[in-house]
Length: 426
Image (cartoon, rainbow, N blue to C red; front, top):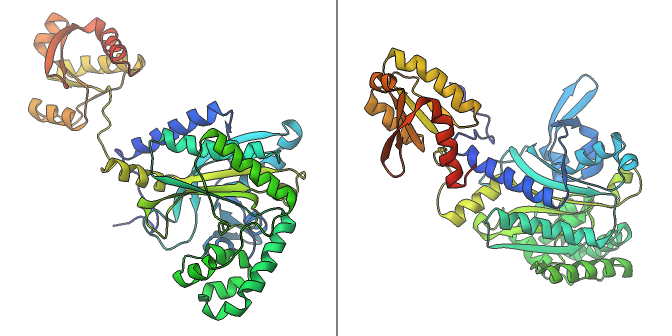
């Protein structure tokens, strides 16, 4: 028997509905903020991520799924931002549109050790705004993330923000960390000893307890920021306060990718555990567009992990998300060969009218077919037998209130449309 690849998951009927709800809510919120959907490919030239994420990052060093074909090396995308920037440049959106606001949904891939909320194929809901360096955009982006979480009915999260400053400020921060940590490298974990040489900022993001204790003892604050970047970050904080978006400032928040500049943020949720507590994250990347061959322009974005959103939603509900689909399903039970043939037309008419309808394809008894309708969480059952055919009616049973009435066969579609409209669920 074949089994799924470790670190992947079958999203089954009963679970898919929760995914669809998140996607629909997201599309609605993005639309109100004037973001338009983009769908880049799952596979990219591996050098795109080497260039954008940084050669020394853990993703590039250990986690990319690579496909080698002769001299070409491709990668399954480990994140969405680099692909969006590549599409922005390659399709001349900087010339035809200038400033653009885009959102995306889909799978990402990283060769990691599978664990709760972290898979090798995982899914992101994210957005990017390219073509502006204004701090008002940072405020919109963070408040948009907050609005999405509220729409998902997820509470108990914390938004943590920081500023890495401009490229020069990041160099100053690197030098500061080298000075402060040079005498303590022996206390660092093995990974952080390597990070000290290759990418010292990543030490601030280490989850190892000893490294966390060392990082927390460092007096960093905003000493490395230039005046312009201090003013930018102050404006962002004041704007978020004005909108009532609660945030915590952490000088140790850096994010793990090289392209980030100025504002960075992370949304954490305590129910996910101390090591993997991020629902989503993002920030500015004002140098990346130019670095990848485009204009010198600012950009900012963020992404949520869908699997983690669902875990947080389940924690809030105290229940699993797998539920019968049902909704306004009409389930037809046709008794006898003649009724089954007539039932084909009834199903076709209901479906062409936009009404969800299904029937028994297993030749079950009436009792077993009723159980199946109940298992499917059907809203109504249509019973059709010889007597009903003679009267040109169907017996319609309301499964919620256990009432039953006869409805003319010619008026079934109109009957169900009226019922659905009454419930306000169309």
